[in-house]
Amino acid sequence: MSFTFKQFHIDDKECGMAVSTDAVLLGAWAELTQSSYILDIGAGSGLLSLMAAQRSPQHNSIIAVEIDSAAAKACQFNINQSPWSDTVQLFHGAIQDFQQQHHKNNAPLFEHIICNPPYFEQGTQAKNSARADARHTNTLSFAELQSAISQLLAPQGTASVILPQQSLTSFIQQLNAYGLFVAKQFDIISIEGKLPNRSILAIQHQQAMTQQQINTYLPVETQYLQMTIRDKQGRYSETMIDLCRPFYLKL
Image (cartoon, rainbow, N blue to C red; front, side, top):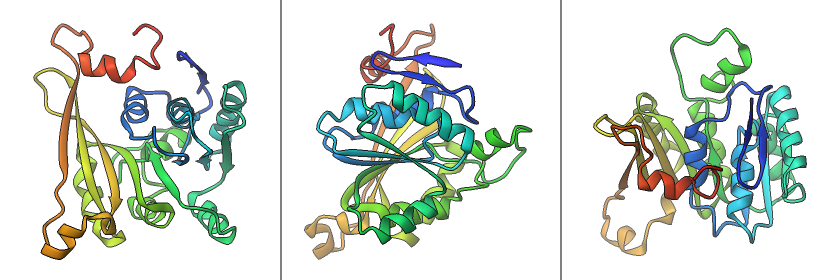
C-alpha cells in the first residue's frame, strides 16, 4: 500500500511490516528534535527515518539500517522521493554488520536511536517470511538489539523503542546486562476504558544518571506517561491529534 503524509510519501508494498499507527506514534513521540545524528534500526519502508528528518531541521545525518532486500529497496525509493534524500542514508545489511563498519570507521555515536523492532520471541509465525522476520525475533533478538544500542548510543543519548505489552517484561529485564535503563515509559491505550496494549520506552545509559543518584545510591526511577488513541465514540483524543497533526493529512 501507499501512504501520503503531509511532507512525504511512503510506498510499503514490498515490506514485511506495513505502515502502522504504532510506528507513527513512535516517530511522533520520540525526543528527536534536538538530535543531529540519528540511527533507525530495522528501517523497513523508511517511515521512521523520514519522520525523524521532518522533525529534526538541524539534523546532520540519519542512517536507516535494513536487512531485508525488498524492504531496503522500498526504503531507498521512499528516501529518494522525499525532501531529505541528502540527509537520510540507507545501510542495507544487519545491524551487527553496521556496528562493525561503524567501529572500524571510528564514526561518532548516535544522539538518538529509534526502532520498531521484531517483538515476538515465541508464537505462531506468519507464512510470509518477510512479515515473520519483521514481527518475530528471528533476525534480531532483544539481546542483539540492546547490545547494538549500548554500543552505538552516545553517553547522553536516548533510544526509543515500541513494544506490545506481552514483550515488555522480557525486554526490560535484559536491559541491565547492557548498562541500560528505561528513563520513560509511554503506555498507549487503543480505546478509552481499555488497558494499554503498547508502550514506547525511552532508554538511556545507566551512566547518564545524575551525580546525586550516584553519590546517594538513589534508585533510577522510570517516568510513566499514558495516552489514549480514541474515545469510546471512536474519535481521536486531543493528545493523539497533537502528536500526529504534523504528519496525518486530515488532522
